[in-house]
Image (tube, rainbow, N blue to C red; front, side, top):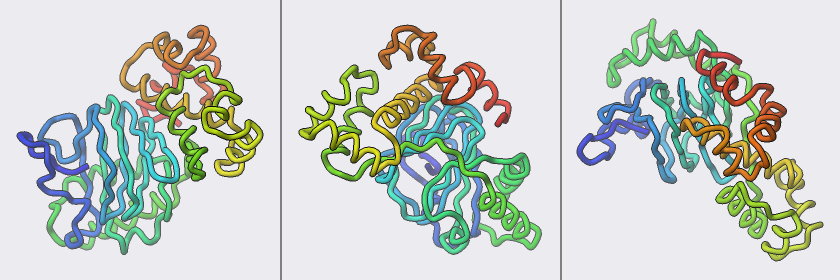
Length: 276
């Protein structure tokens, strides 16, 4: 997600691909066309970066997909994408946020797999300070100290569980992607197994073995993924519940509260002010 040309929406200065320059480049983002880090509601197809990337939104939601699964970033959670990992990004209703690009050498001390991390006020404040620096100038000694603290904050940050693992078996992956395309489907496990040309027993066993989740747990996590994206775009709880096939909004709210400990409204309100 780099600086965009307003006329053609093509990258001008793609800091994610810089092999030279400062070892850390920070950008503040919004939904303006000229923003270096364009947010709003948009999609980025499969791509990868030379540099590692940490990205965060202060409102809305980011959904990241890789070959190994999907990660959700509600407000005030950050995503980490190591250098060279292919991924897709969908941004929903994000009006403000930030992104940090880190050279491969400095990324070596960070996780080697994508993940969602909690962020601290220290990390947020230091990223905002780093965003004011000259993107092409060599870092001064005091700036190097700030970078060291930023990297340490990222490395020590707790990992969040907003992850939907994807199966690798071809038939199972086909079923999983069909569920993601239609999360409100009322097909039973047996019907999905028949659609995927496998037995219900095989579907249960392979889903558990490849994702660590039962079929019912995986499908519910897929529904939550879709629900969070819809809610982040400002769609009503009633519409979300209907889209996902719930008998009533209260049934959906009960499921959401069991999963996240809050109603949808309180969940997003808490994160918009930096809650846990």
